[in-house]
Length: 110
Length: 113
Image (cartoon, rainbow over all chains, first blue to last red; front, side, top):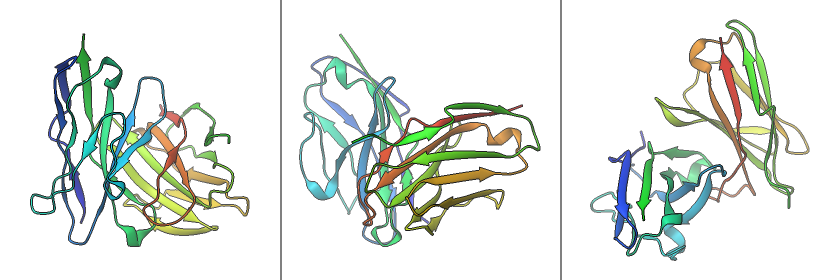
């Protein structure tokens, strides 16, 4: 069975500090990993996916198959980064079924 | 393009009743997925429909069912409601290829009394 774990429910940092939101997964095959974000009073939306290897809003995430991790990082947090972040895993062979982690609320203090 | 639209946005039911939720996907999207979000269990996958066929199903009892119409609109139904069915039900659409980006609606918040 596939599983996604986000160990921190809440992460609080000051503006300008580095941020790392942890995500670990368990899956026997070759997974596709995503980070979804939900800003206050907005819909859940895709932030980035490992396959695209791009930086979105200054965030990056590297898939580490050895450690089965997909941590989300940003070198300098901004107040507008405050949101709920969800790591998700997809089995490419199973259509669009996502397994979500429990989510981490990021609070960036001024 | 208009986003994913879910109706109704809020509803209150009593135990034993049944409920039907509706989802209109983004135009051109052929896949519609449903998720249940609760404070205790988080986001859990219910099922996915693609071209009117159920493509994937999560671990929910048979009281939870869905369907998709030829215009890709989808409905989900929950029969014999239980208190634990109180949740935010999210619909997401995508073009249809596996592993694609999901576009979420605002959700239907169901309260079971």
